[in-house]
Length: 273
Image (cartoon, rainbow, N blue to C red; front, side, top):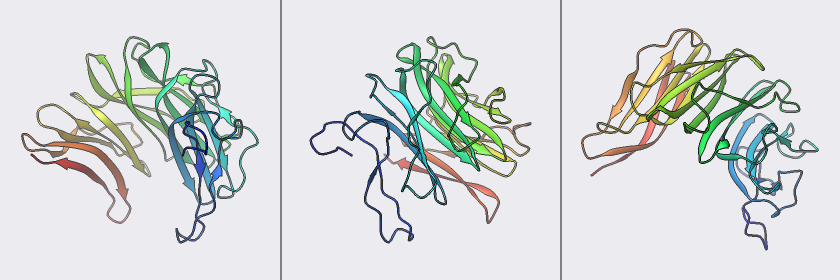
């Protein structure tokens, strides 16, 4: 939103406690800056019952940093101070931010340009107490920061395991990669997911299964997916979800798990020619 008299985007939350019939008046989420005093760019939001978590970037320090806030009462009250997550090199956050939560554990991921803009790297921070305190931010991936470029990212906590997925161009084209950490502060283990060019990567999981899917923009746009059914110890072969006819193209794929039938559901936008 644009606060009155300001040209800066700002972050407000309006919550409903009756299934969407009515909404509370908007609440200004950032605690460390007045409305309109900083420009908010990227944003992600997670809600579990009355717990609301927000991750965003703003330029209150002159350049973009990654900030976190949380409410345990549906957005009525928040932490007394925002948590800055890119503490080891402030001012270089750029692009997407992603947030994941399970119980009291929180995973934050973002694209950072601290080595050599405009090439981005994937940085993460983890919390075991709903975001009151965080691990130092860390880079994930075996690419070379400042030389290779990370683009699409996603984050997930599934069955106690922290996951991130992304694309980077270490082999020339953008390929899909994923990594997992067995818990807060533990090492990240990386695997390459796609056999060809990839974009718009997504994660989803349930119990001990996890799925990574992505858009494959070459040879007729397709959506590809890969699944592990034992907490990522062994990935099954990459499979096509859908292939667009020659001349058509696909965009904005999303994936979710279907509890009723125990499978993954994919949806996308199909542009017909």
